[in-house]
Amino acid sequence: VVKGGSDDITNGLCLCTNHEIAYDRGLIKIKSDGKIEVMSNELKGIYDKIIYPKDKDVWPSEKYLREKYNMMKV
Image (tube, rainbow, N blue to C red; front, top):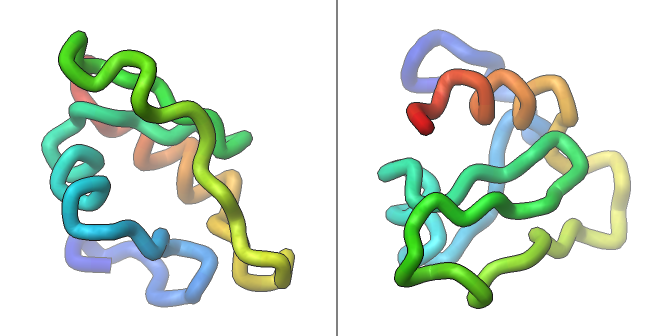
């Protein structure tokens, strides 16, 4: 949203502070299927897959996750 993206609920993730920082810094990347790709050796084995809410209407959009994933540096 900050960079002009949609403010729809599906364009967001509810993460704890630690995960939010890791995500924003590119230490973890979330694929469009929810699987987590760990970019930092220190975090390997800690993260596997994000757990989505029961209500599928508020799941993160695969499109938005894919866009964010592709924008992040490797």
